[in-house]
Length: 90
Image 1: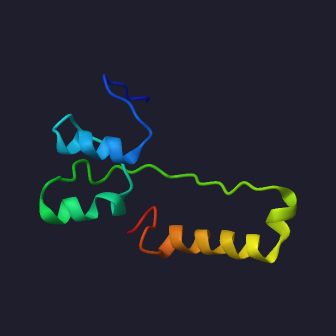
Image 2: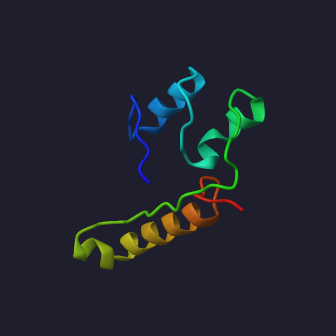
């Protein structure tokens, strides 16, 4: 089911500002709002609901095969899975 409303953005900073301004419920990466949740300026609702985040790394074939390209992609995979800015944390 697609949710619609009077405001829409794919920019997290804009969506976060709307949440702080009281414009309703927003969906953002948990680590992005961790500080606001800890400070009590935002409150988590619907804690049992989550959505997967598909992330793709796209490059020219030659760049993807280079050592630098592989190191970069491996780093991003690790950080987005388990790092400080992980897309999902249990």
